[in-house]
Image 1 (cartoon, rainbow, N blue to C red):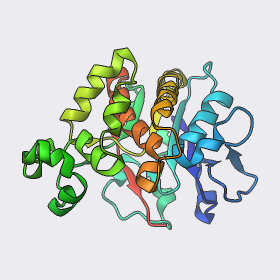
Image 2: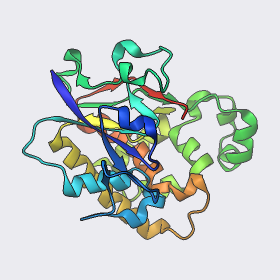
Image 3: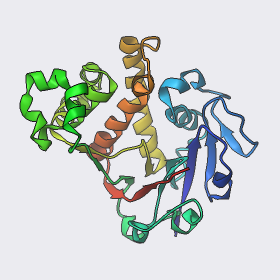
Length: 265
């Protein structure tokens, strides 16, 4: 049985998290008990937490804990979003029974893969009033977006919620080997694999972080921090990473999509 070394990243010390069979990792400025891994010690980017969200811990893990000589499976989840067993999908899962459904081991049917990403979410079907209010700049260029769900793409959705043109600027800073493919991906796909959650092996995790964080650093030269206002834009770097993860793991790894659940907390 391939047990997953799972890290649950949270910005709050929630009582139910202590009952989980996972490593607990803290981000943010709340007070945490001693059994949490802290992302504000050793080699860290804690001062960027407001903008990087759980990536603050991902960076800390990469720089301080990742051991490339190990062959184990390593995964990341969040305080209210969790990987669940294949046969738990669609069931009524809550705080009381979450432990019964948590994915703790790699299913035998997954062993031939080297990475696991979240099952995707659809971006189509947004209310027309919201599209007109928040996506009007794109609608002026292409009015058919309003009635054609296939055109309600990652690019359109990002422009609506995280600043018009920001994704396009960031795409120009992606590594040469991914830039054009990633541009096509966000212009064509109306779904993506969410939450910056993945499960993989150390070598792949190192390659992912070695690609992701230098890209985000280049993006900082364009966007900075001071002008990123409001929840949808202040976490711009986390949202960029979320879209890139969906593309990168599909292009560079032998992946499979797996169920997850979002809990009310």
